[in-house]
Length: 193
Image (cartoon, rainbow, N blue to C red; front, top):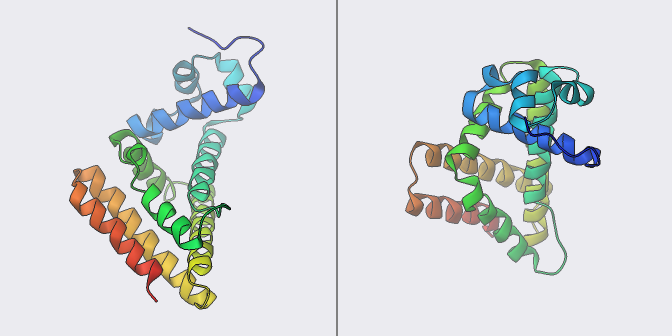
């Protein structure tokens, strides 16, 4: 078994373990995640996994939170370009090649189904979705400041539904023309006058 060097920073060890959790989830679902399987996949000792994470549930909670942070980062306002350009970039990021791999899309499907498996997972998933939609609504409001908060929230919710459908459709079979139309539809929803 290949382990991390003794001097590897703590954060790197935790990231490697979370990478292993996400990989196992995408390949085998929740049944494929165990402390031992994660240690093997991460190339670390079982004791190290147990040191950072109490049990399988805490591993999955941490993985869900990591994906939440990645999702929120997709819609963060960044200085340096116009609000409309930032919104368009955020809407297009969801269709970036790294999000359209079978492994990533399978992971998303597993994460969505986890919300039905455990109340903690459902709460994390709901909070993550709210944060993503709030970030998207903020981008919409910055690009269309005349719109009320309620309308921005409604548009963000509609865009989120289209994006989730786009990912599910991509998992079933990649049709690049449909994906481009879905991104264009998200832009139409978000940027309508």
